[in-house]
Image: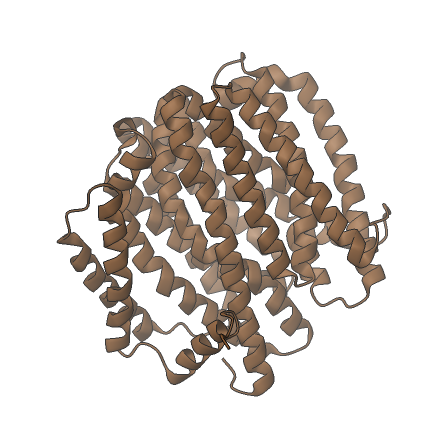
Length: 495
């Protein structure tokens, strides 16, 4: 990163914001860690499969229902200083979402039976269809308002809100499951909690900038940027989550539940690329608009190094601990082998690299090029799922995910070189691999069993990895200085 005082201050804030978002998303991950045992040990694998399908469907439809305004808001408003313009822009986006949602709910009312058959392979789950889309609508509002806070740089505040949100959801799920209530009540509680948090976030926005008045001002420009991303969002979902639908139809809901448990563990890699991406886009949007392209390039280099430093050892560590973790979080019925977790983890590394690189496409406003790239990767994903899942089972879904994300990452990486090339330090990455290997060897000789074995593995593995990087002289003096400045401002000084 640049070494002048202003740039150093910005770099330190950038790193601190990543930590805040990372801590918040740890609480989000705890939602799964705490609720998975409650759900899997109380409900049947079929009911857990229904829960997975509902969650996956919400993840698919929310970006569509929000018209992909989350990225648009950050891209256009991160550098906007005029509060009135920000307020009216939020009102315009909210107006479009409300109108679109009305049409969507009308369609759902008439197609509920067909949607039940598509989502759950049976027409008897209509109630879950209605609950799913009500959850989606409330989540879409929450996502939009959180994106507004993100665009205004309120990373610490929104991180605290999202952490409290995750804790509330986890507590509600565990309580209702232990009380023996049906799955419908659990989903209804998620909707109620999310609605309460929507009201809370609206309060903070109104307090700072005023109520977002519904209008159509500037909506055309917003839609021209966001609408091309809607099919991209759908295609992205096809690559990330459609494997659950293929498994449900080619195999059964029980296999969907088993696959999802391993997929959840490997999905923890998102704890590294998601916070980085969350902070990176508004940061580089601001530096790009201010014509500070050198700083923009540095942020991409720093983000890539940070992600790979964390994701590579985490993937190996999660793989080695996965079966012990699943025995604790679920039952032996959900064990599918370390290989499945490793394959999905590798796919998440590729996706993280893609996520970081794709923000360059947003900066130069060439989002139309993402559509053919996603079409190619999605076609590969669908084809491989259709071929591999019937022949080799749920492992085929993991293989198709790796190939699809690898193709996506390679194509985007090649394309962005024309727009803005940044250096990837291969020598440094090699040192990360060596340190990871040393860490894996140290864990391998431990007898990992139960909670104590997992905790011991983490206590030994993390320092071994850090010491190995230090001995390999992976960090520069500038890296060390940035790390020290980042944490010195977050840890209260004792007097």
